[in-house]
Every structure is written in structure tokens, then in C-alpha cells.
Amino acid sequence: MSAILSEISAALQSGKAKTVKELVPQALEAGVSAKDILERGLLAGMDIVAVKFKNNEVYVPEVLIAARAMNAGTELLKPHLAESGAKPLGKALLGTVKGDLHDIGKNLVRMMLEGKGIEVIDLGVDVPPERFLEAYHAEKPDIIALSALLTTTMGEMKTTVDAFVEADERDNVVIMVGGAPISEVFCESIGADIYAADAASAAEAAKQVLLEKKGA
Ligand code: B1M
Image (cartoon, rainbow, N blue to C red):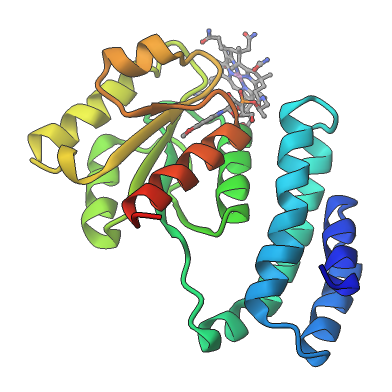
């Protein structure tokens, strides 16, 4: 890996958004492709942060700061990536279910998904099933990602899955669920496809689904 890509990865891991903003244009000027800067610099750094987060070696604040540095870098790359034809790996529709206002975990899931090169449409919190369906029809995502933090709102995940069944769209989309009260058993019981225990696992599972879909 070229030295500047290692520097970008290291700056991202330490959450140094300002350094990332300086290094990305330098790398572009030096002739490194936007795709390499994204994949071998920014995403490589975010992958390391994701593993450390999963292993409790870093915590929420560090992840949020690293994600901010990631966003600073990807913002600078966006026009170049469009030019070089690099496409997102796929698209996910994300939201915290109806009645639930917790969004910290959901936001981490969004950042981790974006860190894997997945486009995320974030519907926010307190999202009713009909809003998921409406956005599904408008955006045609590959994955619907549902978060719930309350035992009283877990049931909304089933209502959302059922809404896709009723709309005859269930077989056209992968539904992933997660959040503190959610389990593999619950996931199966409501007819969802994937349970992810944390944001890093959610992003890894989503990436696998999209790679399989592309036949990679
Ligand atoms: Co609330 N709250 N809260 N709360 N709150 C909990 C969840 C609770 C466990 C606290 C407790 O009593 N010990 C409890 C739920 C009990 C239960 O249902 N069994 C609770 C309650 C009761 C409530 C209220 C009802 C309190 C009240 O008003 N009486 C109320 C409900 C409001 C509502 O939603 N309608 C309420 C309100 C709030 C605040 C607004 C004050 C605030 C939310 C602020 C915000 O999100 N912007 C809040 C907070 C902060 C918490 C705790 C303390 C922390 C949650 C958090 O953000 N954790 C929480 C206690 C706790 O969890 N220890 C609690 C950090 C975050 C990184 O973790 O969200 O679990 P988490 O996300 C994880 C994984 O779950 C996973 O990935 C993340 C980590 O990588 N994950 C996914 C999450 N979504 C995923 C989706 C995926 C995959 C993985 O795929 C799609």
C-alpha cells in the first residue's frame, strides 16, 4: 500500500478529520485513484475501527469521531468517484421502528454500512411500516435495516415485515434487524432474514448479502 494511503487510514482511525481532508487531495494530486483512496485508505481504516469496536478496544465516541473523518474524506471523493464510475456496493433503507426514538445505535449502523461502501437512506426514528414501504418503492434498496431498543417496539419489526408480505414485496428484499432486545430467535420468529448484534456485524452481513447478490 502506498505511504499516503496508510497515512489516510491511520488519520481516520485516530479521528483526525482535518488531516484526512488534507491528505485526500494530496493523494488525488499524486495520481492515486479515488477508488483506491476510498477502498485502501478510508475503508481500510474504518474496517480496523469496526473490528476494534466489536472487540471493545474502542468505544462509541471514538467510532463517531472516526466516522466523521470518514465522511470528511468521502465528501471530497464523491465527484471523483462519480467520474471513475465506482458504484456503491448496494443500497440499504434504515430506520428505528415506530414508537422508538433511540437513534445512537442506528446511526452507528449507518456509519458502518457507509464505511463498507453501501449507500444508506436513513429514514430516522419512529418510522411506521407504511413509510418503509413507501421509501422501498421510491428507492428500491437491496436491504431494509430495522433498529429497535425497546421491548415495547420490537413488535413493530414484525408489523413491518408483514407489511412487505402483504404488499407482495417480501421476496424482493433482505430484511435485517438489530438492537439491544433483539435476538436471532426473535429474528426468525418474525420472518426477518438477518439478525446482527452490533453495527460492525450488521455492516459485514450486509456486505456479504450484496456480494452474493452480485455473484462475487
Ligand atoms: Co432509553 N431505554 N428510553 N433512552 N435508553 C433503554 C433502551 C433502556 C434499556 C434503559 C433501561 O431502562 N435500562 C430502556 C428499555 C427497557 C426495555 O424496553 N426493556 C429504555 C427506556 C425504558 C426508555 C423510555 C421508555 C424511558 C421513559 O421515557 N420512561 C424512553 C422511550 C422513548 C422512546 O423511544 N419512545 C427512552 C428514552 C431515551 C432517551 C431519549 C433519553 C435516550 C435516547 C437518545 C437517542 O437515542 N438519541 C435513551 C437512551 C440513551 C437509552 C440507553 C441509556 C442507551 C441506548 C444507547 O444509545 N446505547 C438505553 C440503556 C442501554 O441500552 N443500556 C436505554 C448505545 C448504542 C450504541 O447501543 O442502541 O443498543 P444500541 O445499539 C447497538 C446494538 O443494539 C446494535 O448496534 C449498536 C452497537 O453496535 N444495533 C443494531 C442497534 N440497532 C441495530 C440495527 C441493526 C443491527 C444492530 O440492524 C439493522
